[in-house]
Length: 458
Image (tube, rainbow, N blue to C red; front, side, top):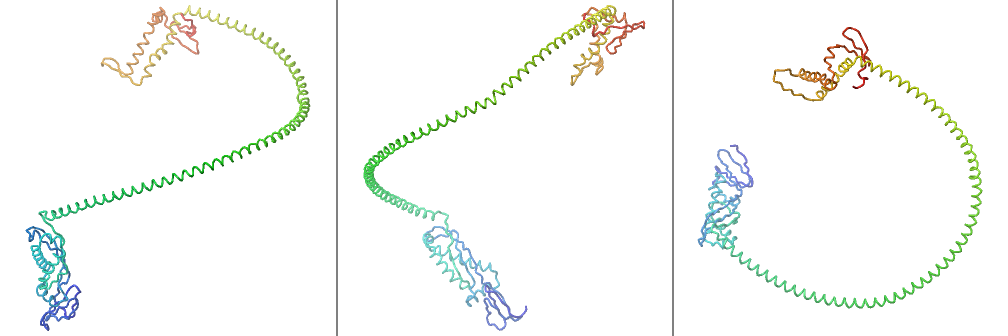
């Protein structure tokens, strides 16, 4: 331990003991010089401690169990040397919690003792008296320990039997009863006063209405008299005004008639001058130009008549020449067609079956195209086969060729000509070039054949 001065705060005290002191030196909130090895120094807390004093289920003098909770503040007294010395003797070196427990137990015992000596009503109604008794009794014991009770307050009173609640219910019922009675009496007085006030109000209102009616009547009488006088004067003024207005209008009309007479006279003179001006203007602008136009139109009409006559004569001559030319052309065309028809007839007589074969061979591709046309429009073709015949494109081609192969039989049924036999008797090879057809016989010679497209229908 280092020797020298030792200090402490205002919430604690120094206790110095040892050499030079017959009893310990107590220094609350200050300093002291300490010699090491021959003197010892200790500290004791002077802080205020708050204690919650619980006293559950304590029977009062009436035998009613209640529970009370009190709050007390205690501390070690540092200003009184004797109390501080007593506290040092009992609590020096002990923790603050142990000091609190000792004080709490002491306060609880005194609180239970005071509760047993009082009734529930006294504790409930006079809490100040209860707190004062607990404070006084507990202080007398704690002082001997050097502890001062700073304050004590009764925090809460409870009972598990409903005693306090019953007291409160009875008092509450009394208060409610008194309140209802007071409210009824106040309502009665208010209604009485309200009725009296309403009666006085109605009386005042009727009196005022009577005075108002009298004043209204006097006002209406005076107003009627004033209105008669005013209407009379107004009618006289209106008649005088209308008479004066009629006289003024008459004078105005006379003046207007005079003005109109003068205006008409001036208009007649102006119109006469206008007629002379227009007659001269008509002479200059209409008559003379009309005569000149008449002469011009007569000359134009004569020229047009001569032109029409000449044009008609020329048209007649032109039509005659055109008719002769058309007649000659028609005659030449008829002769040419007759000669051509005669040649075609001779050719058909000589090459009848060969020509039909040639036409058939020329038509077969078209027939095949028409037969295959529906297939070209189809988006999807589904073919079912048993596996014994052709399938795919060869199957479709075979179907088309079967249809084309039946054409000679159809021709035979329609015309009676057997094309197959004709071809066997007269095998030919047909060549078509630019609309003319040449047949090559089996002997190698060439002879012209008629155009099957221009052959007559049989």
